Image (cartoon, rainbow, N blue to C red; front, side):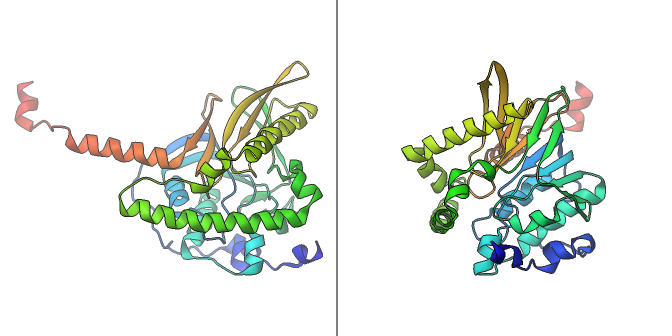
Amino acid sequence: MAEDRAFPLPADILGNVASFPDIKPAIPEPAGGQRQRYRTIWISDIHLGTKGCNAALLIDFLDHTDSDTMYLVGDIIDGWRLRKKFYWPPEHNDIVWRILKRARRGTRIVYIPGNHDEMVRPFAGMNFGGVEILRAAFHDTADGRRLLVLHGDEFDTIMLAHRWLAFVGDALYHVMMGLNIWVNRVRRAFDLPYWSLSKMAKHKVKNAVEFISRYEEVVARAAAERGVDGVVCGHIHTAEIRNFAQDGKSVEYYNDGDWVEGCNALVEHFDGRMELLHWPEEIARREAAAVTAEAAPRETPAAKEAA
């Protein structure tokens, strides 16, 4: 553990984040683009610093959404991989730039570090460039529910009991993500939409399905014991909304997914309604609507006068 705490963070990632250079991003923001507004957005498991991070999709998400509050629910930066090999393309800077710009615009940004970015946990209680760092948070929805927000690795038995096995699993997972990158390059060549190989494999393997189900139950039970109405977490890269009955009380479980496999976000509408967004599907709908609008016949000025 001493090695983990001693791992130096790149200065422009955290140490000097309050003065992050206000320069133009490599991928510019769209001019005058409309954004879908939400009361709250939760995203997690971005894994900046790895090739598996779907930076382009996340940048598109950040360019088309906005909110009063945004929670970064852990594993934003992948310190485990950065310790082995430093990888930080311009697109990863663009993501940091966009998040910090939201903070400057007045969005409340809450960063809850996970296990892959545990080197940020000692900074809990501090504020860097408008980004609050907390170990966990409570969120009150517009319709009066109280939600516990945490990364969720606290409830992962492998992380708690066999840390070495978690590192082995992480290495194997990144091999799978490397294959996922090549699969999607081929799919793009044939004009096919994004598809997650690792997500499909996880849902096909019985043990993985059982682990996910068990994990969800344990997290929901912990939320019930803390007297809240629900819990929002990440960690297992499986977006889900479920309802559990715990000691006669209904407890809502929300997992905001990830930006490596599923590319999901959890959002709260202004009436308190919660929704999971699968961003590749949102992009497909947006592009289909644009094609439909382009194909629709346009009224000429003469036709309008005749009407």
